[in-house]
Image (cartoon, rainbow, N blue to C red):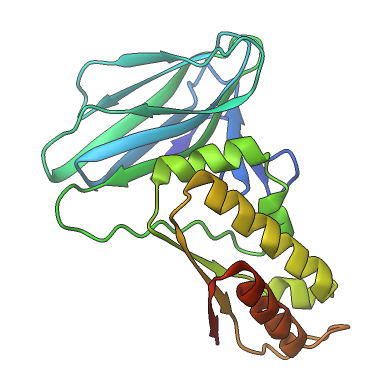
Length: 230
């Protein structure tokens, strides 16, 4: 993955729009701002935010013809997706570059490159340093739309370490976990949810990891989720 040009990253901020509480913005048409990905895939979906302003980006595979995407949505922000025509199961180079910043720039949330066939797809949605609060701070409608697009069979939720280090009240931790579970089920009604409590980390905190572990178990029982303790 190569990112060039000028981009501004929003990370673990209430204004972040990606499913992992990140996104990248750009108005750089001079360089232009560009994302290149070389890997083995058959299918690739671009996750971005549609909004007002008539911004445009374009993409291509293996230096082929360009396809242009207009990101205008009449002034209302919404999670949006563009899926490429499937290609052969081989190494390919995908390129995305900004054409027009419009009045609001371009906002990219991620690339989902996968291979067709009898495979198990694992999406790593973690974000170093994140707390569950950072994920539930993402606009619910946008977050749910992105999860629905990925359409996972199961969701493993691993939080607690960063909450412990930040001395977040365990009850608040449990409330945020419940919100996350509710949103996941709204997006993918039949999803299996596994709450995985991490082990002790000897952090200096107002609370012990055992208190977060106990809160996660309480939430798992109340929400009919699988519970695993590390």
